Image (cartoon, rainbow, N blue to C red; front, side, top):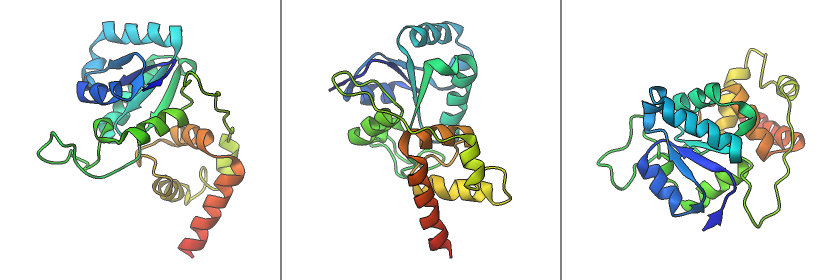
Length: 199
């Protein structure tokens, strides 16, 4: 069991059950899109975020993205950290068939992947050294062709797939995630490798 300083918000009770077996941290749920109409839960999440920080851990499908973006708009960004699970196709054991987009949600992720996602988001794991982040800027994205160019959208999609990041990430979310995971030099090497593969 890994003890985490921040609270974590997930979409539903199965996500919460999965997470509770892996981490020792307060875990809240949005109950899917209910959060849009639930002012009390939203107010509680704001207070928790102010008190100890809040990590958003939603599924990587389009519904998860809508919920994540709603929380981004309603809770100050400096109080939030974003953990992104990779796009892994399959179905959860309790379900008869895969979800609409065919991807595993938080509840279907192996524990080691969830912990890696939380660490990559900058979670404060008690008893471990705080991870330092490598800041990649919007200007770096422009210089590397990931933003502002005619092929930027294609290149971002290609890079998301290569790095096993959710395909629905906005360029700003992508910048934040990549900045936590890679240095500018590492990112340049990955892009160079992709360019060689594409010929």
